[in-house]
Length: 171
Image (cartoon, rainbow, N blue to C red; front, side, top):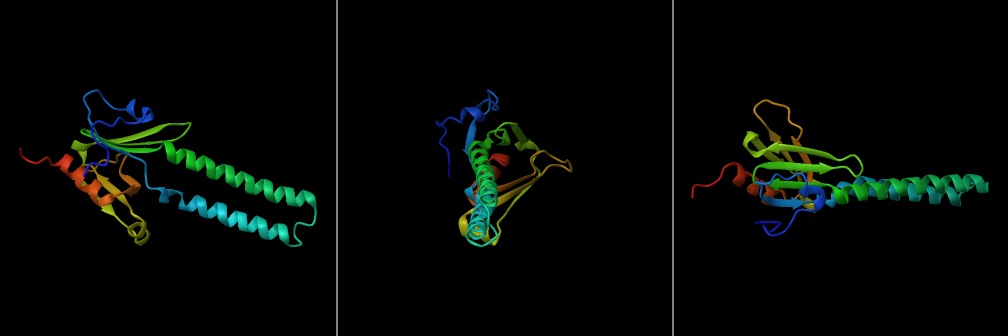
């Protein structure tokens, strides 16, 4: 199962990290479940700000303004996290696994497919319910920059795709 067809081009933010001889196999964002924590924080802080505003704790206009400015900062932080998620990509090429992250400071972690000696995926109960998993890769006793990828969508299909690239069939 191909999640990105061979004719599709990787986003420009990712394409600059691909080598000329590499073929893009899969390019995808990590699962939106990565935003569950930030969504929870925004909702809890909104409820807290609402409760503090409607009780006697916010007696003055200044206190009320401070409460809502703090919530606005939490909301800005959330928007930043969503923006970061929107530019982060997990890329599988014919030669490497890449994880690009960061909105301002770009970080590109990669592992050559030939160096992967062991790979597994894990799925928590929540991951099974909403469809994400974690890839864990090992490489001949070396500590690699890309050894764990969290919030991978379609982990079973991606696992089979990566294993097929690592151990190609006989033609």
